[in-house]
Image 1 (tube, helix red, strand yellow):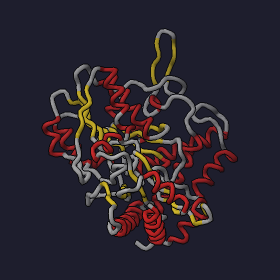
Image 2 (tube, one colour):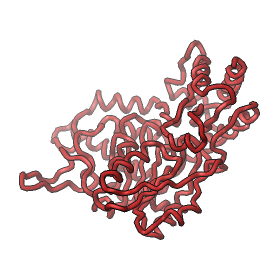
Image 3 (cartoon, helix red, strand yellow):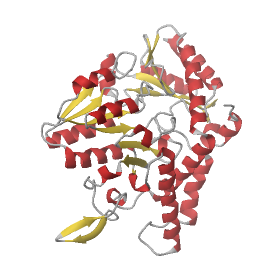
Image 4 (cartoon, helix red, strand yellow):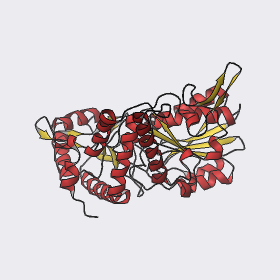
Length: 405
């Protein structure tokens, strides 16, 4: 795929600036991506042309805002190939999506002594909500381990699964290792035992073509801000028959059908899980981000990112004393590394002075850091708007920083 990189980069205003009088090199895309102008324009149009509270008013502004909001729901449905729009629930982000699923699934299906399997490579957001639910219900969290290459030990699942196992929670792509997990295989194992499967797709939705019906997962969560959209918007997909059995996560406006002091009845899907006034402008702008990704081609973007990943990996591998964590062949555009004798925070701080934005620290993955017996890493993560020339600048700056120590 040949990209018109000059045109693409011009569509992202933030990439045009300089940091410390050097061109910005933005390699923190796993934390959050930047926004193209059309997403920014969609946000501005919503506020300046047709902002109104959705679903509950009869005036023109509300009608237009409602239509645009629900159009985004349909765009999400098509993006992931869900069967119905009722399966698409809008949240504040992946973290709230996981908390929603953990609370409601726990209330409906988890009892004392039940077990939930969670992988060792998970972000805290896909560990702590399940722990909270387990603590409330008297259940147990069981860890699915990884090997030193960053591969899930799926062969261990057969021994970890017991008659009390009710759900398996795993990331589609690790935010630290970049490992792309074999979700369909995991789902088949889980479903053969009558176990539900939850997938944290925060790192995957912008980098893989997600076919939710092919994956056959029970839940799937992701965030707009990692997909070139606004922050404060997330999605929870769930199988319809499962969502219908779950109690609401929050109470308030929109999620009700009728309220009486003698009892309340709840709204139909997906509104049963969308209490209160949502992030209207954000959801509408998310629709513009989906349009942008679809026009670009997610597969094309992924191919570009893989090209950058391979190039950067080859260059970094030549630096003495540098270790990369996550060396699986099935990998997304993330490289986490350390350099002997240099603290990761010092590396990140010094790289920033060269205009290079990377992430440093534990990346909200304490169990993963414990597995490798490290305190943290430097993480460089790529998007389709990055270039090999930026990687060259990064490598040169990294070598200079290392030489200082």
